Length: 158
Image (cartoon, rainbow, N blue to C red):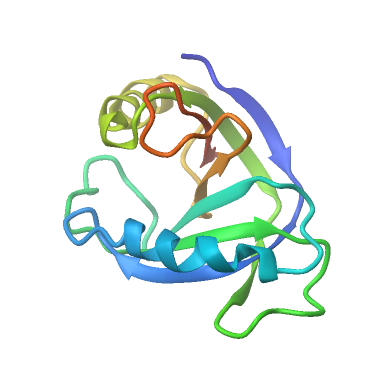
């Protein structure tokens, strides 16, 4: 699995977030709250959904575990922040270089891909993990709870 490298420009996003860990996974709750309201967000740039993680400390493969806390966001990209629906927030994703991996399969089978990216690809690449948000683009081929589902995994590198 070879990623493509892409420099993402600063990107404006709007959505909702919750604090969680893998052991206290609130992803379902986050998306159940967000999905019925996503059409309230004016000025979307694409139809893609963004699942984004912000880690408190720089993420290290050796230190990441089930209780590692992070903030998870459910978002859409927007053209501007002029109107933000009540109960939602603006998020500016900073410009930066990303390794972009294609993933196909169920979310609960992602662990093997995670281990490959952080335990094999990254240590053997010319890149180091950068302390910026990690995210997934859930585009046209994304199908929740379907083994044929496809998404892109964006890993911040330098």
